[in-house]
Image (cartoon, rainbow, N blue to C red; front, top):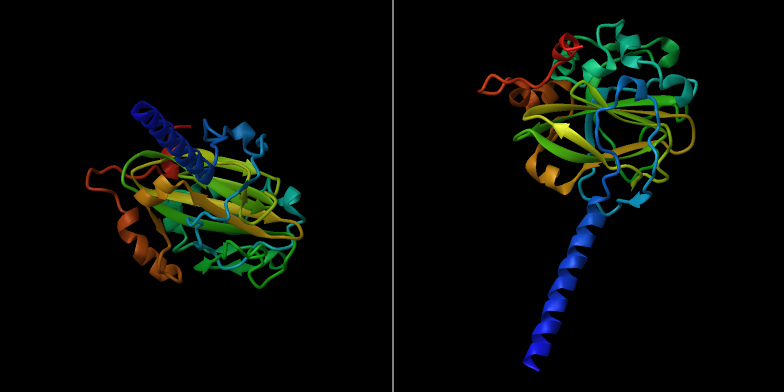
Length: 276
């Protein structure tokens, strides 16, 4: 009898552990993109194997972002705008999309504004704004609701070099750069504001990591959301946190963007170009 009881107890424990592990795997999502960053020839190639995962229970969706204080407008639809570097266009070549996802490029936004043509939104400064992940139309930002592109930036302060998993939800065309490299491209909407089709393994460096998230919208829902795996969110600090404009944002990240005591700086666009 005692043996039977111990056997049943062991089975129950194993079952409980199995359920916990599978629940964790479901909560985190299956990693279905590895091996990045993308090669330049694949920058506009869509990935395959959508997961259609519901991440509405996830508590880590990023809500505060830094970026241009208005959208690029009258884009002609995301199919027309996606191949264009709208940052390069708006700054006369003083900044590019890959460079904007580096410490050097981010710092340049303190002196370089975006000056799109009048029909495309006109001059844009840089500020901090909030996007409600549950709002399926939050990209509109009090402007036109169709044929727009939105750029958002966050800074991730990592305690060490580490792998992380990022999970985007978007409508429509999403493109994500980290530290000067493009890690994600997908022209297909994910189906809902908190639904994820791809969980992407990315590499973070110790110190500042600059994430540039661009989304192009043609019509209907307009959202762009992002979270990382729980382990990453527990280990890092993500900015903006309390800032509400450009000045307070750079005050908030001043220590993060600085070179660390070992003299090792986060990779910059200049470093990347030297290694081409």
